[in-house]
Image (cartoon, rainbow, N blue to C red):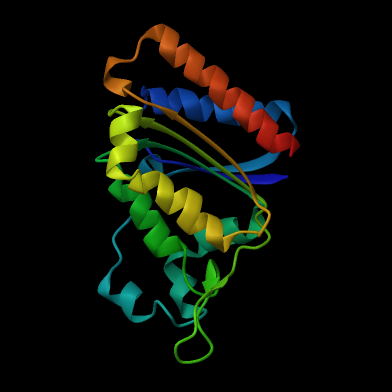
Length: 199
């Protein structure tokens, strides 16, 4: 197993950082080779520039400014996201990473015929983990539709292997979480990640 961990949070002492550290520790404990991408720490530019958009469908020129990201996606067979849910969705930084790194020729194949649909390009990825925190409650998040979760667990998932194994865990009511609820969430993440690694 080769895991790409995409981490997205601006503050070093956040609970998301604790989740990231747990994920990395569990991967190391299981002897899993991994690469960690810390988007904020790296100063990743999430903006799709006019030039990026102009060459978006031109392969391989569309990957020139995100070559490292494309190489990471082609290298891994497991993809793990750790991030906070803001306004029920993905942080702009993470959404920008998807916009810029998930380019045609890497993440998907453009339609060959008029009226055709895209084809999956990341079928070598057989495992997907999504670990997040939400300020809202579980019921409110799902009432709104959980667009962040859906983007990753449905949208990105469709680009991966057909029988891709998945793991998801969310700490709801993050703003009023207690030390006990946070500790319990870390146990949940550990258990679901371990199951994903063994799958």
